[in-house]
Length: 122
Image (tube, rainbow, N blue to C red):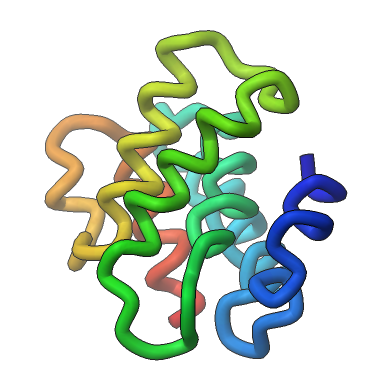
């Protein structure tokens, strides 16, 4: 999947603020948070590498999360998650753009871990 993202979104992979280095840190942060919550580490892994993959710029781009959710549909064959996990992943990507904290995720620990893993690196 990472290779496909690199091929289809090369500018996003190389982004200074929102590229692969950021995605790696979001992944690491998410796995650390998983230790304390009942979160799905596989959804967090995919979130880390997809959530900013559809940015159009480094600044304000309020639609990049929803675009990432649509990109997930294009990548479905490369994503080794079941349908309920994919729905959660799409919600995490779509909602992260405007999520101030994981508290907005309600009772879902996976959403909270995804969003907070991203915020820890901002």
